[in-house]
Image (cartoon, rainbow over all chains, first blue to last red; front, top):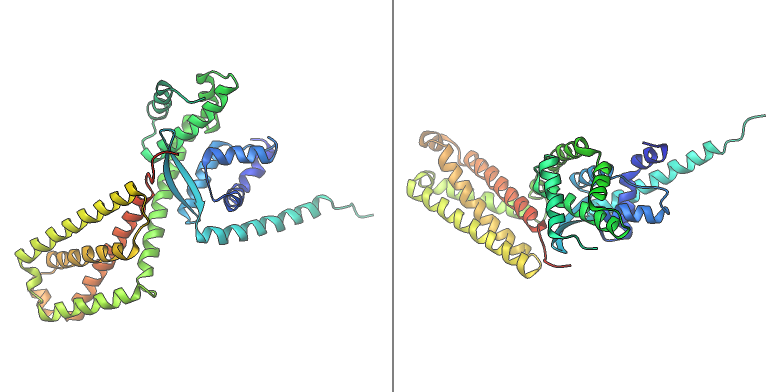
Length: 112
Length: 221
C-alpha cells in the first residue's frame, strides 16, 4: 500500500460521508468512480477498503440502505441518516482542522 | 457493454464456489460491483477473465473477501442491537410513552381481574392463533407495500404490532408462570413481566419490518 492509499484509508469514512452529503444516495462502485473522477485518477479507493467502511458506517447508524433491481441485478444504495448528516458535518470539520494544522507543520520554516 | 447471462453466472460462481462466500446480501452487493467494474473494462477491450481477476485483487483476493464477510456479520449484529435498543428506548419517550403507559394500565387491569384465565389452554391456544394470524396479515401488508411502492403507514403498523405483542405477551405469561406463583404475585409484578414481553415483541417486530422494507423496493431502474 503506497502512502497515498494509507492517507486515503484514514479519511475514508469522511470521504464517504461528504460524497453522500453532496449526492443523496450512491452505490459502492459509484463511490469508487466518483473519487477517481474528482481526483483525476490520483486517488483510488480499493474495494477491500470501501465496503468494510460502508458496512461499519451502516452499523453505526450513520448510513441507511435500500436495494433496488437495476438491469436485473440487486443494487444496494447508501444514503445518510439524520445522525449521519450531523456526524458528516462534525467529521468534515475535524478533518479540515487537522489538514490545516498539518499544512502549518509542513510549511514550517527552520528557526534561524 | 451489458454482461451476458453466462458472464453473470461466472461472477456468481467466482464469489460462491471459488471464494467461499455465503452471505446472500453481501454476494448481491459484490456481484453488482463486479458486474459494473467488468462492464467498464470490457468497453476498453480488456478480456472478461482479466477484468474479473483485476477486481478480485482490489478486494484483497479470497482472504480479503472472507475477512470482509466476517466483518460484515459482526457489523450486522452490531447494527441489529443498536437499532433494537433505539426502538426500545423510543417506548419510554413521547409520543410512544403513551403506548407504554396505556398498555401497562390495560395489562394491570387484566391481571387484577383475570389472573388465571390467561393460563387456560383454550385462551392460550386462541392467543397464539390470533398472534399468528396478525403476523400473517402484517407480512401481507408489507408485501403489498413493496409491490405498489406506497409509503408506509406508521399508525397502522403500530396498531398491528401492538396487537401482536399484546397477544404474545399473554401467551408468554401463560407459559412461564405457574398458577401458584401467579396467584401469590402482586398484579404489579405480573404486569411488569407482561410489559417487558410486550415491549420486546413490539420492538423486534418493528425491527423485522424495517429490515424487510429495505429489501427490493422496486423493480427496474
